[in-house]
Length: 257
Ligand code: 6GU
Image (cartoon, rainbow, N blue to C red):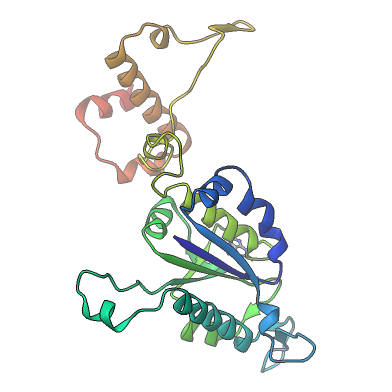
């Protein structure tokens, strides 16, 4: 997978792209990550990328030209790296590259969820466009982007942190990125439920005990306990998540207790 970010603050991404699981995924060649400053594509000698809104009013608006030019340059470079030869185009066994998803970060967008991360993880190429402080010229929306996404109902100063959130949750789903392939399958939200409680040594800490069942070695009972605790915790904290789930008789009974 390939992920490009267009931003006025590419330095913000250095630490995140290099550290921890994302850094390892990059080192293993599972993902290519890059952040480009679209100010380099300003058509103006002052490097201006925004301007005052037509019709008046406050605030500034990101101009369309630098954003379009940056995306087009990116796609030109990609094409030059992996030229689609005539022979390959003729050959049915050579897959044609999928067009990139071009994602605009904005508070008015669709809310990002685990389902969206799973969808992004199936793409070959993602491009994130991050604005800062200001609005976007509407033609960026109508003529360039495929998706508009927000990470939740609160206001941030820019799209950089939301882009990092989406990149992190998408890349960890790529095959080979997480050491334990199981952990992406059982974690909160992929099962539709919140996770059950975890314990490690010691069995007693400051008077707080590890539940006996976890020490019993009885795997079927442990699985049932975990499922029940997941359901209980979800009912307590996020009851709306249960509406989307099909529960069996036993599970419905647990929730009534
Ligand atoms: Cl994508 N951008 C900004 N500026 N604020 C946000 C957001 C995005 N998502 C939640 N809040």
